[in-house]
Image (cartoon, rainbow, N blue to C red; front, side):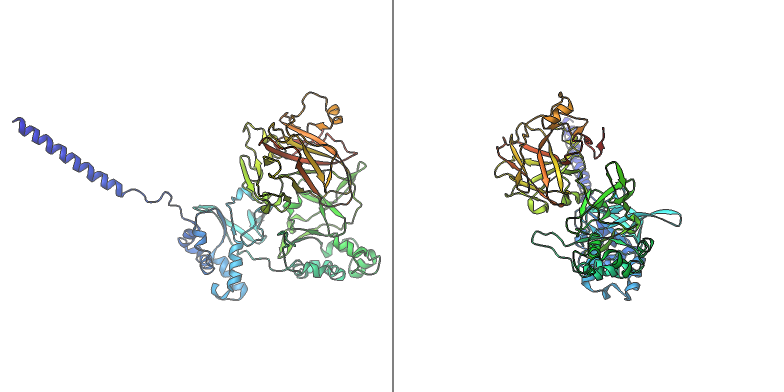
Length: 561
């Protein structure tokens, strides 16, 4: 009897094991073979028939497979109705009737190489260019009583922030068009700018604005920015035709002569570089094509003013840029429209606060630039306005608040980090300054103290060293009265202040010409393998208060006494 019971127990055990194995096998077959079922951009388009025509464009141009890879993109996606309207405008019946090269440029214009949510949109350009190279302009408009987000001034977003596996999609009611006309032809086609265009032709500037976009050996583009005036602006100031302009401005009677006042009048409205409203808003002064002349720029509330300055306590009113009508993209630059006439003015020294981390390439990294806790390592080939002799990388660091290193206390909360700043490591390093108006300045260098950095750094402008060196190991002084400290060549430049930061007067310089200059830092004593953190360099006119305004610690504001 006992043996029978043992046999029954053995059978029960065997049966239990078999059932368990069967259940486990069934369960294993139910495991998902992928960790994410979210559709990528191309898969999303294939799953939604209303976008089939733009999908056809991606297929024809071979971008469909590219947009199905993992990464981070933003797609401005036209509906089928939008693509059909494009075909009608072009007078063709199908996508295949459009030249392949044109389709490729069109497709790339709709794609950004990063994910950009509408909450990051501003009234102006998106910081990063499209894959095509031109920038996307966003804005707000009231249509049929409702607020709409516009794109490149013509299309509207009808469905936004669609999350897919490799980015974000914004649906458009129109196809974006590549700006393929030069500045000259763009203005020539605008009847409201006919008198300005006549002035361009009379002075020879039309031909220069009609040249195709080029890049030099240093990858610097030939983009230009034009501050144009409409016929109405001219008429409101008593100029009805070209003869009126010649009578008022052409003092030599030869507008083609670069020294003729009419030629200078036009040249003063042409700026080197690609400067959208968003770029001008963060620029205190910009060079013009009129030799040694600049326009100053002031952001007042939501208005951007040209040449508004206060001199001897007298306010000289500026001229407003027509924000809603500006940011007109051309193949070789951008056009802004002025609300009034303006003149070349004699310029007096004005303060320049040079945040060394505010570089054009870094500014385009919208997910990093001034975003706390983010950083990027860059080679000199990736920065057009910074140079050094070796193959080391500098670091742009937007410090995380409360990180213990106090880097977030810098102005704008960011610094340039030089690792082991010494011979063979980023030494010497040269920055191209913003435009500095000719005149005499006191120059201040601020930094985050580090006991392992160099104790002796020579600073020079255009190859001429300043009288004093900077000791990056030196703490800021919190005990001396501020005016006493200033007399010793130091100050507390941020508010609220921490002694982890310091600011050193390196000397006085007489800037001989208005323009951009070369500011160089050279370690004359090696560091002890520690980081050097550079904050802001100030060029303050010698007759200006050197303590105020101060800089908002961790913010972008100025603090006045």
